[in-house]
Length: 324
Image (cartoon, rainbow, N blue to C red; front, top):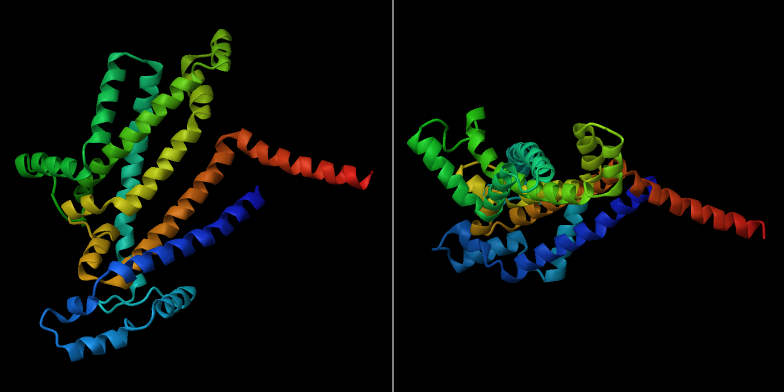
């Protein structure tokens, strides 16, 4: 188990290095000239050349990439062209907002998606199943920005119950969390339903019913526990997606998160900010994937036993060779 975790941690290094090189190359090839954004449209060629030399933009590609990697080894993501502040400080100032939105939406999605998914699987083709399937199809198909605008139109403009923008009060988080929570719950509900339908047709479920166990115990203790692995996978994917892709929702509700910050940085041609945010989100996603794989081992004993058997087989072969 420990060797498996260490192996996954070591595999994170080439993944992150590849992300850094790809993002840096894309910014180098097609990013445009940031000096115009920094100095304005009426910049003189002399001032433009001075800024390019100061920022090292005239250096060759490999030199700039090497300097950037060396700075990363010291934990330096560079300084923002726009604010002149360290990019890490800018990221950490906005990271809590993105975390609140992500995990609030995930929590709502898990509660709604798992409960509705289990009911839909146990009561297949019933009215509740049809309603849950319709809601999940709507949540998967409808764009997040459209759902956000409809919620603002109804609850903020028409009914005047909830604020449309801001993040200073708990009421400000209701609409953005519901927007992403609906989509998250739709994906989790579909996966829960399909996974549960596959499990409840197994022989050990019929055996549990023949023994006279209650339906609640059969569904929760036997069926749901064995259907958890694909559900956990879906939850991990949703967390990564919300950390990296909640740009539209943050823009609609004017939330000062990482998504809105990276879009503004792209428009400003703030290369260090874009590269820093992408790398920071990539690290988060890799860590979440690692935690997801570790949770698999605790949820499904077969996965943990698989690594135990492999270790045991290697030991037996080595022992056999020593004894001839």
